[in-house]
Amino acid sequence: MKEYRIVLESQLGPRAGTLRLEEEKEGAVTGWITLLGVENAALGEWIGEHMIRLSHRLCTRVSDLKCVSVFRLEGSKIFGTLQNDTNTMFWHGEKVSDEKGGIEEDAGE
Image 1 (cartoon, rainbow, N blue to C red):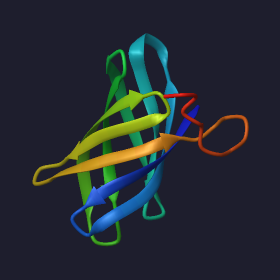
Image 2: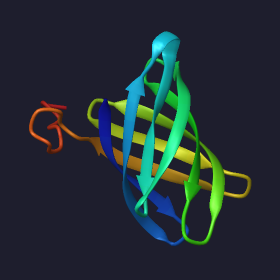
Image 3: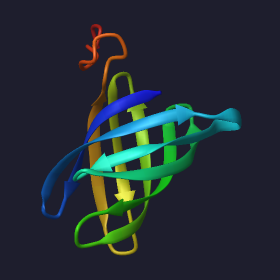
Image 4: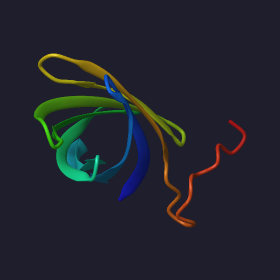
């Protein structure tokens, strides 16, 4: 399972969380987006060599939004957009290292 520390740039300011992804058969992806202490299941697929589209909910104390996020993976960095019926917000973050539990270094990038 791959894990990323992510930040959602929301209308109420940046919201830090995690994204965990597991690759399945035939390009399918499953995982979890944890934001504001809530784990939100995510299902999706690879839509290019470095891009994933995920369908998920984003639950908070005051709302439960049905969302689609598209992420672009660039080395240890991750970028993307979240869209729901009324808003577009931006994601950014970094991969968590599997060996040390820290952020992976950019190895000369």
